[in-house]
Length: 137
Image (cartoon, rainbow, N blue to C red; front, side, top):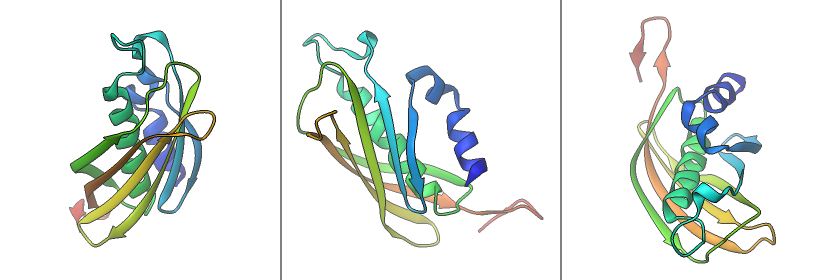
């Protein structure tokens, strides 16, 4: 799990957007993101692309927390429920189902008061690599 956390926190995207780890357990991850002015759209609220990015990262991280070495988003659905303009947003993801090659994951995005801002589900390709031979399984 330590290597996985290092991979995410060391990624260029993670650093660029300013994500912070708020908790991780097997199959479940919580992240937080302080809102900064560049995240705001023409309506002066956080752009939906920021919502989607946080939710995608939360779900991918949740799938990876099951012990997979590689996780790739295959499909993602986002329901935008409420706008936010400032403060910090929080995400929580959980793996709903997994098999050898895919994981179905859900995530929610909340504001500081606990209001749900968005709900997402996604299907992720998951891979474990046999380090002895570099083979996927």
